Image (cartoon, helix red, strand yellow):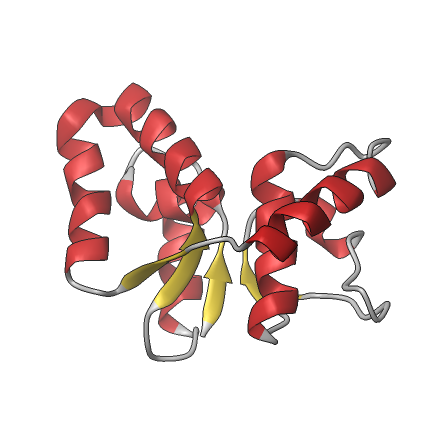
Length: 136
């Protein structure tokens, strides 16, 4: 399992994205099985894909969910509370809602692997102080 941020979701679908080929190549090296994202990242990706390619681009993202190649993680109450604390802790970075949701999901799901283009994930730490394993 690998958590997936907004950037790669958009770049994999939008061939005009400057990170398209980088993400396509990185995705080939990721573990098999579905990618996991959160609703805040999915929402952000839908917005950006609409701007990049309209509804047809959004349909491709929906198809990833329908084919179960992308799983939407439902954030629980404890994860949401954790997100508030993390956003406060990293307010100088700043940590946005989507980033906080991924770190909270990582802690809840017991994974450190994250597919992202966001360099802030090199700064964020899990509750035990360990760093995330960032791809690409």
